[in-house]
Length: 165
Image (cartoon, rainbow, N blue to C red):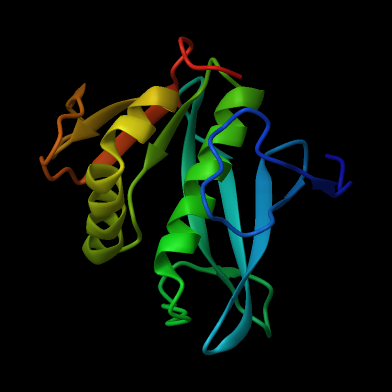
């Protein structure tokens, strides 16, 4: 895999407030820096191939300084949650544009993180559905089309091919 770093921009996606994102490994790994009350914190997002063809697991967290490993349980408390969530959504958008045939399985490392993303989704329902087709699962990996206001334990996200590129 290539380790070239590419600076990526919004292309035609609406200009939501987000951090500058860097993409490495041909669009499989992304990183950005959360800047706020606790300083500058390196955040990383990865798309990990699952055993099921065309499905990637989304992994997100803070880079642990001593090991360089993603810690999905650290809460940065940098008072920039919405900007981080917007950045994650942009990363999902970028990945689905690069790999439109793939699905992304998304569930937070904790129920709180999953709920936080679902709250973002509900606040930005029209925006999210413009760019993505979203399925939800309450349990047992039984997937249904995601509906507004419903709590799910996991999401499957794919590119909405009717959206602008």
